[in-house]
Image 1 (cartoon, rainbow over the protein chains, first blue to last red):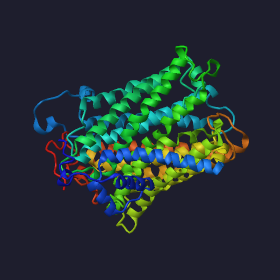
Image 2 (cartoon, rainbow over the protein chains, first blue to last red):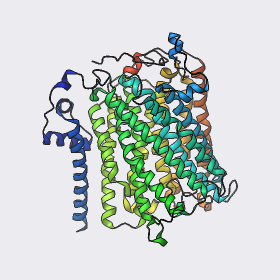
Image 3 (cartoon, one colour):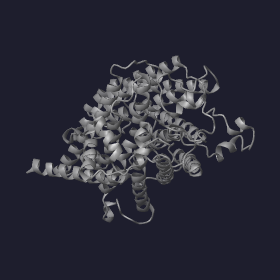
Image 4 (cartoon, rainbow over the protein chains, first blue to last red):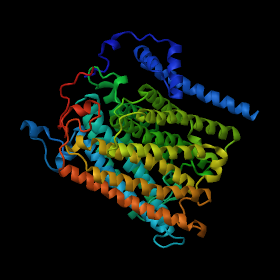
Length: 74
Length: 525
């Protein structure tokens, strides 16, 4: 019954590179995405890469705030 | 609830009947029903504790309960509502609705599902039974802060054991939901076609798997400090009570999202149905939910500004907390945009959903105010915080649960809920809710501390008002009980698509949903 990926679009190889994946994740941090960009993402992003990019972006988020705090306190 | 059993449909394979049907069931609808009945019983139990607290606080001085028992009530009210009422209610919704929404015949691990539920009643017995042991129930606050929790009587041990059991139940439930959503979707139901309720639950389930072991670790350390000679949180033995707060809130803040993300999912199902428009920004909602989940791990110490943190730490957690409000705010805008120029009608589920947006947003704003470290140091441990989190958890999670219950009751029972009683329930609830909790903002700003059975005279009027509101709110919930009982017993027959604008696979099966659905997987185009 594992049929979630049975659609023809899912048989196509998912080729999105590092930057398109990061771009999608960073837009998610703002919480807004254009419909066309979302459709492109849905067709091209690799879910595992999205998870990895999410963790990376989370770490980046922490680092950016930590740097901002240091600048404010300097 | 009134799901037609397989045996009734086909007249063969007689399974257990009576009580044994419910004890041995592996059917997702039966288990979902049991989760919801359990959570409603716990909701009423926690509600009685809340009303006892409000009765004591109706006037200054001590009238109704002793201070020790008052502290037990505040602690147990929190634990019962969080772990016994809100979380199991959402798992009940997940059990009933996720297989129906994705076109699956059941949950992935049906027997584990049964076990997940049946762990809960023993945990509830331990938790509620702790009132009757020597020393009474835990009185350390629902956060079980050390060193208080290290010093309590055996009621604390019962609470720790109950939390362990409920945590195991939650983890098993979460694993079941993840595997069901990822592996059992109908052909053509790609992830990005999935109803938002399933998305929010998928992300919530990951959060649960990540943080429930952290809570289990925290309470286990308390247990070993209490009985086995360790000093994790005991300063006299070289430990650090503040470390407990860090560990607890590393669980506790994602827990806030565990209790609100499924609520976002329910509201995102209901508003498009009654605005008769597709959800505005579906992709944004999915992306925003995922980012809230990730960021929720980086904000925990905003609960601890008053513990004496370096300025860099305060600024870090203040900035991070304020930024996490952005994707949450986007969701509110998306719901409003979905309603914008829609052909809206305000049947009971829609009333609850719009009420949710109104009051939850107020809770969100006060959350932002608490996120500002210098303000938080002023309002820490005052009624301002009590007002804030009740606006988020009652007006957020609970109102969304009611919205979802009214929305899906026709599917569960085969009958339409009474519109008149449903609307009465809504209006009584939203009015009394605000009478109860809005004055608490003023009390908090004026400096009234939380978890205290007596107070100075200048707080008397707002406390009296809050207590009157609380009794009104509590009694209003009995209307819901009447609605559900009436709905189960009879009433206007519900069509398969009970609401004109409702979309989704769950509305393609008859009402009430047959005991077994989607034995042949539907094709989604």
